[in-house]
Image (tube, rainbow, N blue to C red; front, top):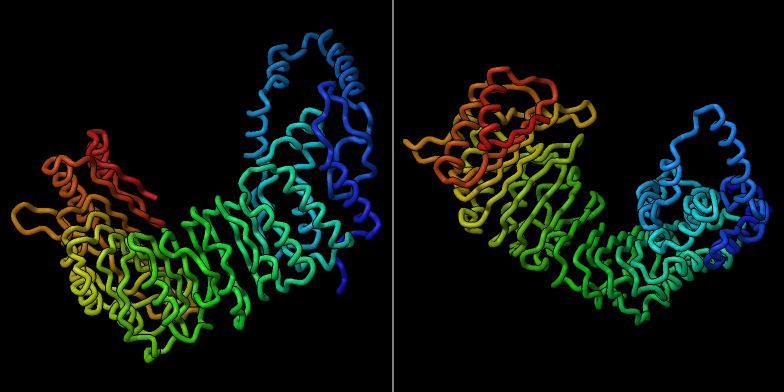
Length: 535
């Protein structure tokens, strides 16, 4: 395969030069630059090659400024001096904010040149090219050197040998001193490069704070038997990219991470390494259509820690309604549950609801994936789930987003949620020709809004509602119906319950609010009774 990199000679020279640059100690107080490191690579910026450019540049600048001063246009001296007197800590914060985060992201457009820049931390070396002070700031600010992203598959197209690349990574790790690390590692085969890189990172395991691991083949032996204590690891993203991969289940290094509370993973849970499930507070699980059944995600939901947050992203477009995983009785004590999925089968949502019991859930969201087949709400199955889970007592938040459901069916479901405080409704987007879905029923209608109006004369639907978010696709309701709902809820929450302002968000992509409605809301907002956003 043809390499996308420049000539091998230049790249090898650059690799050696980079190693020299990153190994320099702090410069002495005189401000002199390090010795000439050699000719820089075209795409990597190194410190200036002039042995004492600052003295020369300063003299030239003074002559130039002297000429300007004679013409009466010299900048105020305190402005120039303020720039030079910025504290090092503030300067490092400014630099840190300016570093482009996309440098650390892997995507399909990445090239071997991008990989070389990521390894060498080229964006930091550019700072060292400016002047001796910036060199000191760049090289002696450990947090600059604490985000490392590598894609080992590109290494075969780089001219520097694996040993030199590993030396560069070691220099970066050393520059970060003892600061927490954010690592992203992608490899399709743990050959010499991938295995040695992970073993090198494992030596700094006590510094890991976030780790994203995309791997095809079994883990390296060094990681399997590593005794490193991951004392700082807080977040793990794990994506085994080969279906037959199973040996990661023997990796125990993550089991002893006392701070690990956030987990993201894709595919079969059986591919996961051993994890401290009892302390995982936030889990996101991606399952695509290649998974033969839903037994796996549902069983992980069963094992989720009590009080945790669980997000399940499912591609069910080719799932059969007779899937053998349906009929499971999965009881989970999660506090927050979000289910994103696409589906073309009307029975799927009902089967999903009938498989779950959620005795402690406080926030429940069902969201269709934009641009794909919208899930179809199963009203009767949801009512059975609510009854089985005693949801009337503990569900405080409900989100129904891009789900095909009628206003009448949604109102039936809201009747069994008397403690609901937050309601979010997003109508389905109009289907594209690619999805071939039928036109969805409009959900945000006058019927729905009028049913949510609070009245002291009749038992109120959702009496504790204080936060409402509506995102209609087109307007099939009147401004007066919306105004009646908001005004009545403001009266209930603020005037009767004395419980602060009512909050509402209205997403209107194509429509504008009437002036009379805005005037009504302005009065309530000025009185501190309403928080209203139109986005």
